[in-house]
Each structure stands twice: as structure tokens, then as C-alpha cells.
Image (cartoon, rainbow, N blue to C red; front, side, top):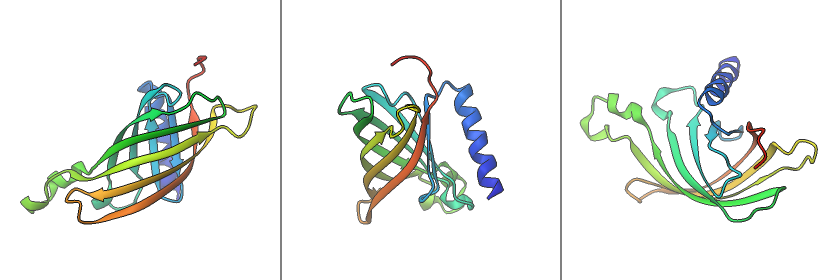
Length: 153
């Protein structure tokens, strides 16, 4: 538990230094997300697996598109690619491809507390297929997000 917390603090620090605009943690799926500004029409989301073993340290890169301009809730759609760059270290040449699969993302980022508009509850439905399209899963993510930018959007 302490290692996960330390890793999250490290990611948040890196996010601040790299001019990232928001971060989200999905505790039920052990996923940490760093995003560009999710208040803009087009934004990018980078997700990292927080698992404790290296064979499943996957990264998802997803461009997202906001569908509305509400201040309290933003609905979005996007598509993503899941990759594990540690696959290059696999001695089996047939398993060295970093590409793992593809996803579609449908979600909402809501600000339920009016006095804390940068704190968000994030819910997302995401069908996922592996790179060969022979296996798939319907994922649901729920987490807490925080927008770092203090600028008026």
C-alpha cells in the first residue's frame, strides 16, 4: 500500500513538472491517469497500470473529445491504444510487440461539489479488444480526478 501511495505521489509530481493539466486515479482498476486539459474540446489521456508485477505494466494513450460545454459535467468519447513497452525485454521474439490492444472510451467527468469545481468524479465505459481482435472485455472505470490548472477555462 505504501509503495502505491509513493508511486502516485511521484506521478503527481511529474505531472506538475510536465505541465499536465489533470490526473485521475481509478482505485477499483488500479489505474493512474495523467491528462492534458480535459476542459478543452480535444484532450489526451495517458493511463498507467499500478499493478505490482512488471509483466502487466501497460500504458494507454487516448485522444478524447468533449461532447458538451457544461461546467458541472463533461461527457466525452475517445479511442485508445494499449501498449506495454517492457515487452521488448521478452526473450521470446514472438512476444516482443509492445501493442496489446485497442479501446473505445465513453465517459463523464462530473464536479459534484460546487465549492471544489476542480475535484471530479469520473465514470467511464470502455469496450476493449486485444491486438488480434479475438478477445475482448467491456470495462467500467470509476475514479476521482483533479484538475491542476487554476486558469479560467
